[in-house]
Length: 128
Image 1 (tube, rainbow, N blue to C red):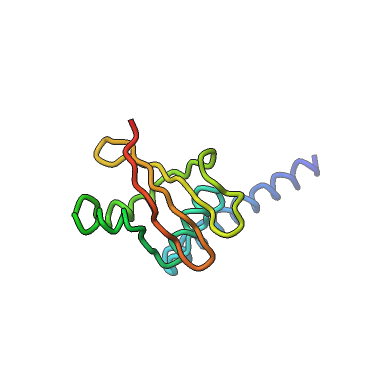
Image 2: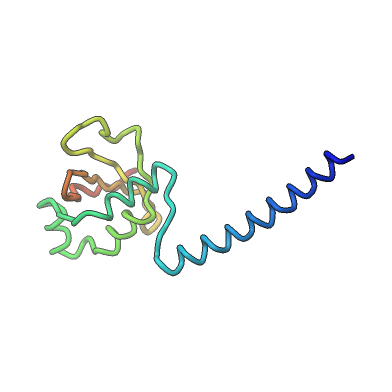
């Protein structure tokens, strides 16, 4: 009986501690803007956003022609899904990622090259 009593006290204390920790970390992350990215998709997108963006000639032309806007690129960089099977993650100099997303009910892929100091937006394709 003593073991069950001690186990009960332990579980009560553990649950109170977890609730306190949850609210403390949530408040801290809201104030400082810190996000906890543990999954591979979130970590890759966060790394791509942390570097200055450069555009290829094709993307620069699309931005000038107004067939592409910066909000679309921002959507891919924040909400996109990285397709790791089609991405080149083995390259040592610049890794190439394919980021998929739905824009205006159309499936599109954004090709992004992740180098040491910059992130280059290379290509935007509409998938069938």
